[in-house]
Length: 115
Length: 114
Image 1: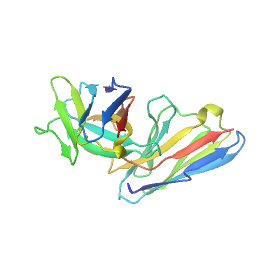
Image 2: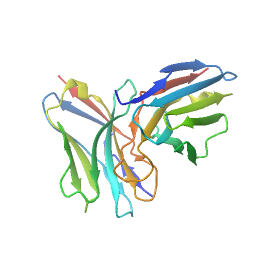
Image 3: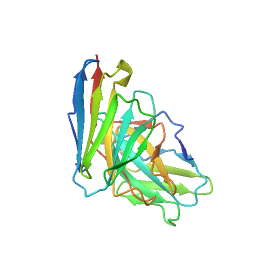
């Protein structure tokens, strides 16, 4: 139990569907992150939020839309995805963005398959 | 910019033996942090151990220890008394003093044999 919960664990959707991934952290952290992990590729940072404000968007296509209503919750809204978007999506949190000694704590991930 | 290199795509180790997973890094920052994560086949990323660039002692956490050689820019993970449950992907990562990113290496798959 890492203190970061992601739902759903698995998601299969068509290219025209709209779905959302949810992440909740119970660690009292202020920073939250979305990562994409594709097969045989390094982990890719997608978005960073600090105190509910987006601080980083790593050129992510607009079909991925993040939302951070408070420091404990992070969503990733998905629409009109492509087959290459099939991957493991990991949420993480850390105390905040300062300090090199802060580990990020990850959730179990959502394994997304696009048909 | 930071860069992490893990040169071992896969490793095998006999149960109860020790294994070293290699990690080298590149950064121009004076202050930085190094992390190791374990990812079982189920997907979750589990934080294992942290080493700060100014720490004089090598970090240890239970059966995990970090062999930190600053001059060589290496931060190898040593797992002692390997267990079958240690079979997983292991990632080395670092965070520099001016960025909010964790930069990850490509990972090493470890298989523990009985």
